[in-house]
Length: 186
Image 1 (cartoon, one colour):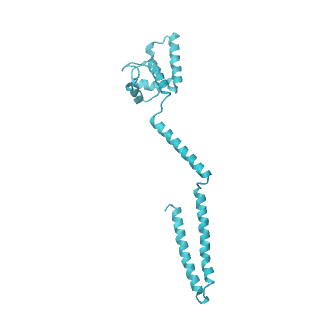
Image 2 (image 1 turned 30 degrees about the vertical axis):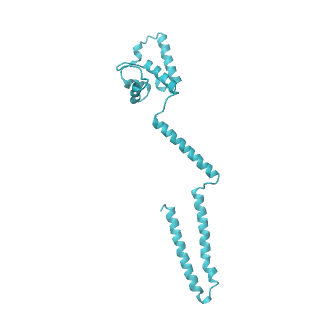
Image 3 (image 1 turned 90 degrees about the horizontal axis):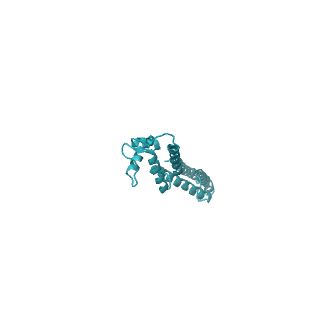
C-alpha cells in the first residue's frame, strides 16, 4: 500500500491504517515494521536506494539506525517532509523534460498564431507561389525573341531570333537546375 502512495494524504492514510491495526490488538508486534537495510526501506517505499541514502544525510535525516529501520517511523517522517515541501518532488530529469515539453507547446502555439495572422506560410504554399512566379517569368522571357524580332530588319531577323532563343533557353535551363538543386537540399 505504501508503494501506491503518491501524496501526503496517501501516506497519512497508510500511517493511520498501521495505527488502527496496532491499537485494535491484531497481535502484530512493533518489530513487524522493522527492516535491517536501506535497500529494504527503498523497496518498501518504491524508491531508489540512492534516494534513501540521500534521506539519511539530509538536513532532517530519515529516522533509524544501521540494522534497524522502523517503517512506521519512516512513513511518518516522510509524511511530515511532504507536508512541509508541498508534495512529492519529481526527479530533476522529469522536471527538465516537463519544462522542455511546455516550451515546445508554447513555440507551437506562437507559430500557429503567426500563421493565423498571415506572418507565416507553409513551405508548400511558398514553393507553389515561387513556381508560379518563375513560370510567368519563363513565359515572358520566351516571348522576347518574337516581340523584338518583329522590329528587326528581316534580313537579320531569323539569325537574331534564333540566337536570342538559344540564350534565353540556356538561362532558363540554368535556373531550372538551380531550382532542382534547392529542392533536393543542395
